[in-house]
Image 1: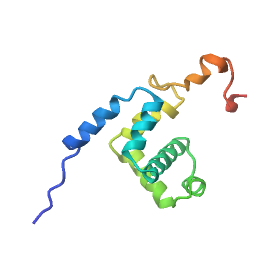
Image 2: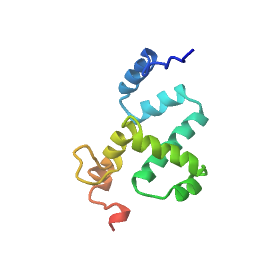
Image 3: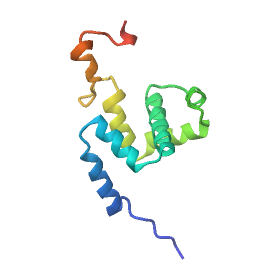
Image 4: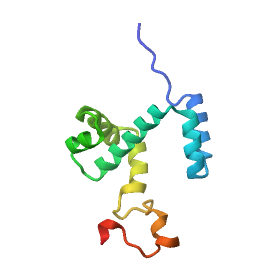
Length: 125
């Protein structure tokens, strides 16, 4: 008897993804995810995202593992999904972290206007 693989994404998942697309502010996002997930789940997801950020920057698995208090196997799993997954990590990471000529890349708005306009990022000093 063969196992039938579950369809991805399910209609319930699509409904969740659609709900996430309706988030309109950082505060709404924080509140939505806090209601949806436990603190432990939020910490785990945040930690994975930090791994993606650092992998994109080219940091070593060992350094990432030590700094984030995870195993190198965990970093390797995140790297696998970054490089061989469905492209979700790469799409968002390229918009947020890739400074090469990328039409979707954008710097944090705090450096373009307001009180910090004209300030340089610490790594540009």
